[in-house]
Length: 451
Image 1 (cartoon, rainbow, N blue to C red):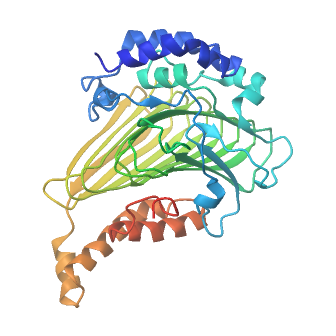
Image 2: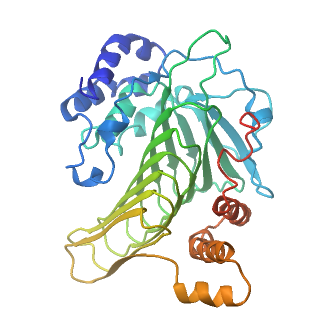
Image 3: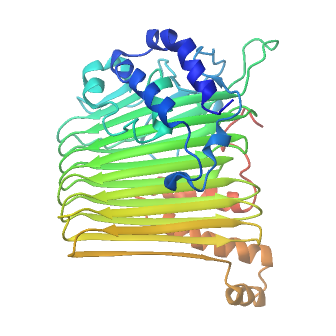
């Protein structure tokens, strides 16, 4: 059986149940997504944007897709200590793909700001949902659109600034209440819709964790509409385990004079594939895109970005750094497309990588595609090992080889972390990164269930 066939049969068998449990706005595009998925199938490694990750293989196992609404016997507030110290946040939990509801306060939000299930806001969802994430262009997006039963909506009205960062903690869990019941390895499909009207500002921090020692597969699609003069800081941090597969597609549309700061941090994982599609639709917009990857053992991290300059006077900056140890594999493919008429574009793309062993592999492919003649665009990539002269210098001063390597790796990766706008998060990441290099971060930080 082809890897996509089981999902085709699943949808045909469970279609009515999915429709019964999902908002009308999501159901409106579901059948079209199904037809697009059936037409495309999972992309092979011959597809340019998927050449470094075998997606077909990832989806071959028979996962117990989270359609039956498993009971979750855990209070996330008690099981996870996921707050970033000194970071004033409004905290939300998503267990698998379901919102965790209780009476604990999540923090006061400005008037007009909406955060919650898509089923509660049909008008907004119907206007914006699946407009950026086109199912005809990407099979993973199509799969997510046809199976996701609910999603998270974040709406910030005109000229409203949310001072408190919004922290969303995604928890993957597959332990049954009845010990006799067998729960299969689990697949979940998350959906997020961010809408920032003119002059709005918000900071979003998504943290991915696993709470059980099982095989998990999570697809995630984030759509972000950033209006004129609006500002979005979007942080996505993964701290799962080696049995986790995460496939995330992020779509961002920027209007005139808007600002986006997008950060992806992979501290611990199994197989991770992140895709970013960002489009400048209004003049004077700018984005800063940063990536930080630490991988060892046989972990795999693939970041793929496409930034499209459709209009003049926009600025994009990308910096992705990888540190790979053991037999880890990393990949970065970044493409900047400057369309006809997008004059006065400024773009810089940089990918720098350290391979600590001969068995570690890094694939890097920075690309520029320019159809305008008055631009400033540059790109570059490096793959290398730690500086022997620096190691020798440090060892001559009594520092052990292991400690010298750790210090150099920390200094290398901290360039990305230091560019993050949330100071408490920067401090927390400096701490977590050091623990990661010392081998002390082999499970979800703060998870009491795994101890």
